[in-house]
Image (tube, rainbow, N blue to C red; front, side, top):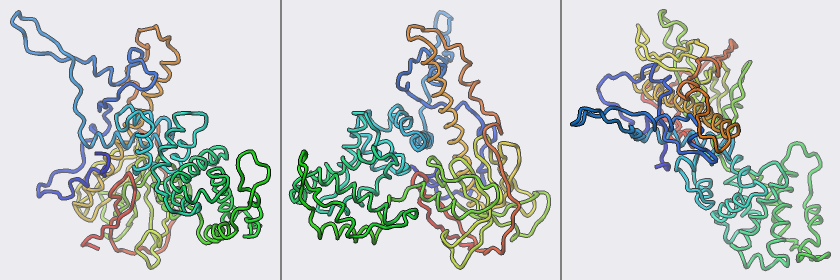
Length: 502
């Protein structure tokens, strides 16, 4: 099921003829009564918590009267989660991983998305979209943990590097993670890579006296060479002769003082390939957000590049200054970037290209989604209007080109608000559980004395989010209308969808 977790509208692309409203009621958006069947987390005693699962477990409802006239009560069974709620829960777990990998793994395991075993976790980290490659590198590089060592072993074993030169194999491996910054963690990952390489290429490894030890040393040298040749901060670049000289006598068996030289042609080939093509990590959702971040300029622009943040969709709408007043249909066209936790409104300047790479954007307004809600309106010339109410009660009005555009955008915003709201609920609940387990003795079976989660987790509009704006202006805008969608918001791979109205 988690192979195809897409934005909620995509499973139902075509809308019927019925002119039903797309936006849910505001009360539905702000409700904190959504029940998520979260199993107890690690080190969690259910008797010490006022968590949502416990509250629901003790909620009863009346049955029909029995023959003796007395009413019987029974525990109300938990509501079955819909596919959309389950997908949202999965995205929330990924968001936590992309911020704090340990907590994300805890949720993925507790919620049943992965088995509590190193090989299952390694498979998920290797094959699922929506995971930050830098956070994967941090997690598999964790030191002094037998469990993490096994995850690293199983993870590297999934990379097919048979029949490849060491540097080519290393380049392929780095498509699946970003090396941590800590040298000790880098060495740990490179060591696991060297062991996997020696098992995958026994014939090539046999050419080295030191076996996998030499592969380990050579791999680390390649990482250093890549940094030296491609870092903008390095002024004196390493030459090919320097690279060969640095590895002189390094092919040796463990314990030997003087070893043999690694084949010169092998080293020269490695140097030439690294100089020509930098070793780079594979693309992920963070890389796409970085590209958007670089394209947007403006005063008081928020930091967009965060590992938990992903682009949900990007489309063009007409911003309406006042729904009660008329304005030109071509005025105030805006490029709207919807992320999973915020909306950014910008004015685009096209430079002979319809791709994002050919655009720059001037920031106009932005708002966080936690505490926000979206509604629709229809008034005068604004047939497909929608309003986003910011956490601080400011309102941003838009008019879409057509009914389908509005439905798609409202569905995305609604789902993103729910995701942000439920993620905050989970964060508060986990903090409450952590606080409870550290302040109450294990033999104390009484309630924590804290307020019920239903009350303590109600969100205050505007308390945790803000809206910003910029009055800076820019030159003319290309009036072509198109919509760019992220057909799999976990992967955030932007796909252009040209409309007939272009």
